[in-house]
Length: 142
Image (tube, rainbow, N blue to C red):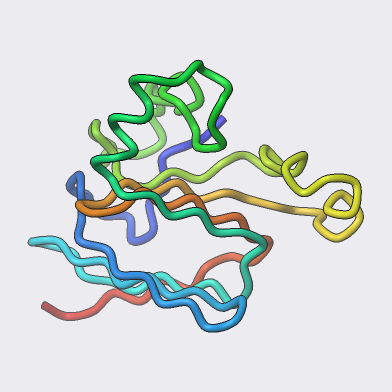
């Protein structure tokens, strides 16, 4: 199950412009919207999947429910009342602990103890980021 994630405790609009920079296992996302600009930095990641947004939407309409690794609508807690800022469509979600741990096999179960997934739908890409670290979020002035 994925919950809406509130990196800055502020309203977020759907489909932000997100740029991704990967340096070894370190990942930085630059997030740009009308009202919010921020960076989200993960010191280390376990896995990263990036798919073109338009291809992703087409792909979702043609596959069976469990043939993809990205969360489906039924995996998203859309009834979350955890924040006054939450409105659908919400652009960024965080999984409960170890939702995707099975994707890493038996060795992954020994390596990772607190694996979280972040699911982001941006203007151009859909991201699925698996990590054990809490990301560092920095709001940038517009």
